[in-house]
Image (cartoon, rainbow, N blue to C red; front, side):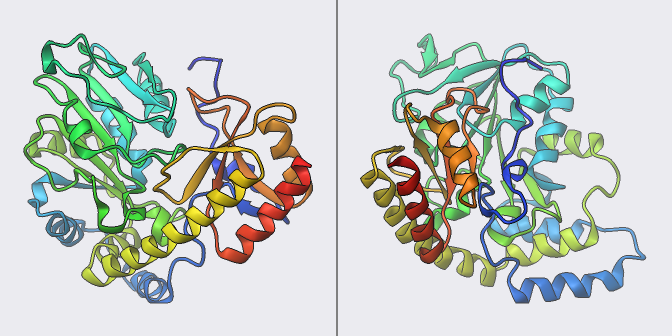
Length: 353
C-alpha cells in the first residue's frame, strides 16, 4: 500500500470520549425503535445457520431485479474485498476523491490501481467522442475496471446517472458505490435498477441511514454470472441472521418511505449548515447531496489546525488529507440536528476568529 496516504483511516478513528461526533456519517438516533425490536427478536433464531434466500428476494424486488442479481454482504466493505479477489483487471482505476476502501481492497489483493483525480467542483463530466475518445473525463479509455462513488464520500457530490453510465463499455467492469444514495430524495441518479448498462456493479449499504454500522449489512447488484463468482469467494454464512432481518426490513415499503422523509428533512438542514459555514469564510463544496459536507479551510490556520482546535472544544470532524485528491486544508463534517449544527458553527467561529 502506498505510503503517501493512509487509506485505512476512517471517521470512527476520529471519535473519542466526550466528543460530539461529526466525523461518522451514520444517521443519528438510529436504529429506530421498530427496527431495534426486529433485531432483538431475531436473536431467538441464532441457533440456526443464516439463510439469505428471503432477504435476497426482498432486496431484488425493491430494485426490480431477480434474486440471482443480488448478493448480501457484511457491509459494503466486504463487497469491495470480494470484487478485488474475484476480478483480474489489467488496468484498474479508482476515481478520487472517494471512499478509500475500494482502493485499499484492490491493493490488498495485489492489484495496483491508477487514481483518476477529479478537481474543481469534483464533478464527473461527459466527454464527447464516446469510446473513440482517449479519455472519459479523467478515466483512461483502456481502464477495464472503474470504481467510483455516487453520491461521493467525502465530497457529497451527486453525479448524473447518464454520465456514469457513459463510462460503461465492453470489457469494462463499472463499480458504483451507492452507500449514500438513500440520502437523496427519490434516489434520483441511482443505477441500482438498471440492467441495460454493460459491466455495471452497484454496491449499497444499509449501515448509514439505519444506524447498523456495528451489524454490517449491505449488498451487491450485478449480472448473475458475476454474483455467482462473488458468492463462491464469500465465506460461508458471512451475513448474520440479524443482518438478514435488517436487510429485509430496511428495503420494505415502510422503510423506504421513512428514509425518503428523512432525506427531505436532511436536505433542508444540510443546506442551512453549509450556508452557515460559508458565512464564516471556509469553502464548502457546492451542491452537497449526502449526509455530510466537504469543507476547505486554507491556511493559516488550515484544516488540520482547525480540526485540532475543534477537538479541544469538544467536536470531532473527519480530516481530509487521507483522501487522495484532497489535502490538509480539507475536512468532512457530518450533518446533525439543528441545535448540534448551531453549536458546532459557534465553535467553528471561535476557532477561526
